[in-house]
Image 1 (tube, rainbow, N blue to C red):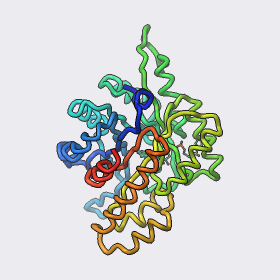
Image 2 (cartoon, protein in one colour):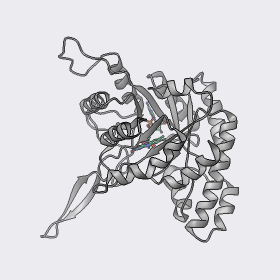
Image 3 (cartoon, rainbow, N blue to C red):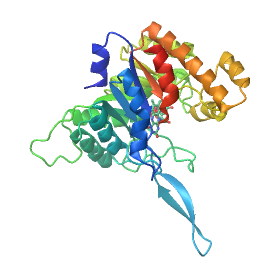
Image 4 (cartoon, rainbow, N blue to C red):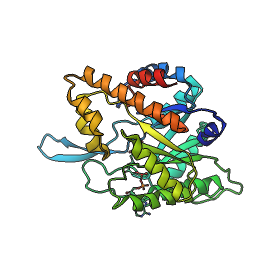
Length: 317
Ligand code: FAD
């Protein structure tokens, strides 16, 4: 079923979450066993991230370095199939512009449609760590709005090189990313909001937000989106902080602020175990306030470690 249908049919806030494919060589069964306890909270859908190629330097016997392309976390499509098969829950693969030609995107969408995927989250993706800026594939999309357009085109039976007499139409529900604290490249919040509107105008029907730790940022974001006349579901993304290193890394990687109250509590922590208790308590408080506000779904970034999200959900759902 479509994410938007789950939301329309629900009379209360739903629970959903995101997982990452395991690092290459690690097992899928560990991942599936790890998230199994979260099924207690009846997620209607689970998001599976996509990880594009990265570059590593391989040293040859003659001392020369060769730049080699690799993917550390392949398997998004296979994991979607495994989730749907094992848990009978819809899987939402993330689909990127970065690294894909339009034709590869088309073929990936056909694969997804054939395995029964009904929803996709359409994203631009970031530049590989070795590159300064995002550069699209020669024949790919520069912005997520172009990807949304292509998916919606397929829903209308439009293919790139349509040689069939009667082509089939896909029927994907398309979500996109939103940034309560602004996307890091956007010159202003209003600019970023207009680009979000372009994704919705192209056919996206729901938004999942970047993680945030101050609910007021989310409330202000929703207000601004509504002012643009968009009434689509805006799903808040939440992450319980669990390690000392995340206090520095989350703001650095995701361009977000940690509120003073949270930082004061985190600064008193001496170990990861202490941080985890503070992070879980904060996420519970955030979640309860968002439920009271009436959010459609609470969407947790689990980083494929379910225990903190389990403890939060146990208090909220
Ligand atoms: P876009 O919507 O294309 O926006 C990118 C930037 O360009 C913004 O600054 C925007 O303001 C600007 N912009 C947009 N359209 C235009 C235009 N027409 N003209 C000029 N400027 C424009 N990354 C992954 O690699 N894999 C994942 O699985 C993944 N999952 C994610 C899930 C969520 C919920 C979120 C919030 C992010 C996720 N990301 C993932 C990260 C995402 O790929 C990055 O944040 C990326 O930098 C932007 O993606 P986007 O889809 O928001 O891009």
